[in-house]
Image 1: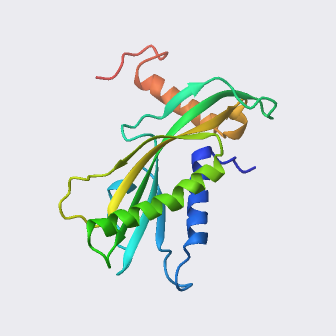
Image 2: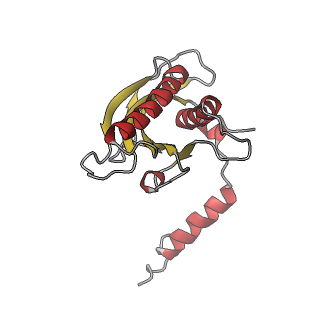
Length: 197
């Protein structure tokens, strides 16, 4: 049985699919004009996709300090499996765009804002009433000579924590028991011996 998607995973998939749908590649064999990536290491990478411009959306779990979010009481009763809590999960969406045909700051601002105006409705449509913009800021606005412009949007998503999550996880009990036993022996627990030096 396939594991259900987590809320942030679903959001990333929708952003990737809908940006590709709205801004398709010019030729079927070329890369999409908007690159969508997920992860913690991605915001620091530089990508230059084309001669006339490029756009990149990075979805990073947590806010810029690494906070996951907060735990609230259960919402959406009557679900199967029942909901035991709601995680108000934080995520940071980095929106970087460049207009290489107009190197002015106005051109870079315009490129980043247009990407913002493309992505925010995707979030709103897919999490109608269950998301909130926590903060929005320009990334490194102090740069004098910039290549493109980047926005960082910190959002909060209301995500369900269902009861019985263990049914979604598979664990090899024999491997876990073996590892625990090995660690106990290494620490001298239950073996009558002293811990190794």
